Image (cartoon, rainbow, N blue to C red):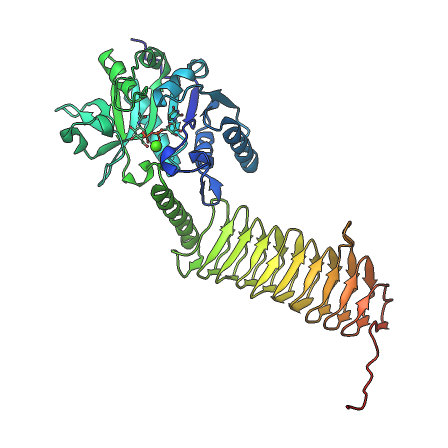
Length: 462
Ligand code: UD1
Ligand code: CA
């Protein structure tokens, strides 16, 4: 038998299944974990192995899955070639691999994994590949010992401990069902032998499907060496077939990411209610209070206090900022800026250093310079606010005329009184003052004082 292990590696991700047990209109691999579709993690891991190519088997809602995969690759900047294989009839993992043979045949070794095991780690996959090579096996499967093996294929071993076959739960005898070593659904194959083995698969089983797991027995009986690499903890072998397992995977993945932050010097008061993301960065001595959710490409600086009850997405927060009970997206806060409670910072907001955005303030596509304040109950849209500006309570920019958006420019040290409407396009000059209650429709020159309201009349009370 030829056992040439050298040559390129191909990775195949099975993601064609519907995910019946999710009871969902959304394909299973697109259910989100850590704010990203589950398959994102598998793709990321696959790319990290630096294979010659990655194949993704799609079937159920193929176009939706294809698009999500493409988005995921772009989002993360993976530029490895990805080949989509369309599985026409969804008749099991074996059928998926059978249809992928034209792709797999280009490689000596194939790592086959599933889009529904997002907890796998690079170190483990690397170890599987290494053992495969070192032991010159024809199949190396990743197994795990689980306290509760229900739902997984069980690994049947000979009295000498060799892997004999995998039996699916529905086909298992009570004795086999009692086995606690399970199949993770990730395998390394010598492609030359897989070709013949998948041709021999038959749907004579409880699900009437072609099981990829049966290929192992065919390879073994044909004289191939089948071995298993067992994970140190069962955790990462866990698959997601239903929503209970989804929430479990979310918890585990999130805990891993929080541990990474805590060990790098971030205080997290309550890891059970704090959520982060694989790409989030948080600086030393920052404190994350309960209910903090940091998503996407968010970067938080040093010595910040974030939360409680705050969601920050794809934003950059400078050092020593504070964000309380707020929703922040595509925003940049420069150092020592304070936000909240109850602020909504929308895409394109840039504020600080030392800016103050107070309660019930919404800001969109606007810049606020050094030391400027919008402390209470304001809407600021499409505005350019220079340094040391004070915007009084309840003042707003009227940036939308029903058709187009217009800009408001406020010069340095300007003072906008309370309850002012700035009807854009409009410019308030440097050091200008706008009296409370004004509706400003014309520019206010530098240093001038503008009144645009009815003069008060006091009349005798009848
Ligand atoms: C599978 C394994 C089981 C293992 C478990 C680990 C088989 C027969 N069983 O069971 O031994 O313990 O994973 O999580 O493989 N898929 C396709 N096309 C199909 C059917 C499935 O691409 O026609 C994909 C699915 O999208 C999924 C993966 O294959 O990503 C596994 O399918 P699933 O139905 O979840 O298999 P399990 O019952 O979990
Ligand atoms: Ca599964």
